[in-house]
Image 1 (cartoon, rainbow, N blue to C red):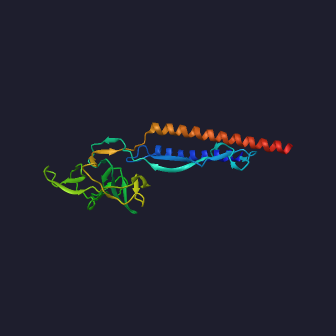
Image 2 (cartoon, rainbow, N blue to C red):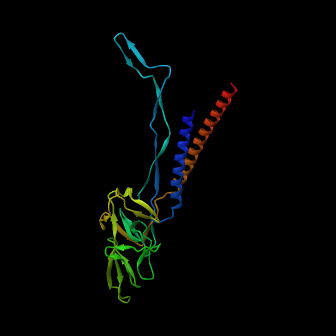
Image 3 (tube, rainbow, N blue to C red):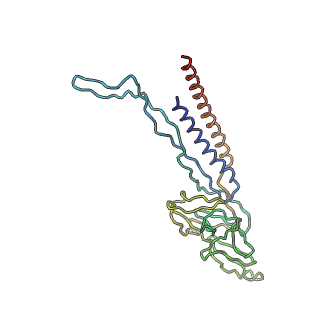
Length: 270
């Protein structure tokens, strides 16, 4: 009887974890460069059900064999296996803002933080009071030569991530190369660690960052931002499914509890 209660309880715990993942995806549906998470579950090992009144031993004149009286298999619950991130490309939004960038293909922009270098797909950049190219949170965007500093004149970029600025506002042929955006890739991007604000941190399993092959498999788009890859309709459907699964396990747990209470009451009367 208690085994059924533990099985139902494990199902409720799993649905709570799934709801946390879905809720986090929904909360970041409008965050540029956000990559949605997916909760993966696995079942506990199944157990064989045997008959108590049969030892399964068949005897012959010259020996015996053991034919286990197995009735079937019974599940013992489920648990959360892992939460992994889907790195599918989000939808692209055209802004026509020269400070907005998007990566077409695999790769991450590099930014500098107080905790060291971090990586992001959020290319909604701006320029601070010192002329440094920064994220919306004020983190400096890194180029191949360090932080990227611009003057007050116009700027443009190409598919290789090269950033040019106009040295003379009266001469539209006076474009000067400032730096190239530092765009990196990883051997196992699935194992990057989320840091919040669309930032990522490399791990031992993801491998170290290396320069992306810009201009071929990976291109830089200027005046475009990559949105999140969260589909709100799909997440709402998942939320409904999780709620129903939780309620089903809750009803199963209550039924087992009622049956256990009735059994104990009847036993006390006897």
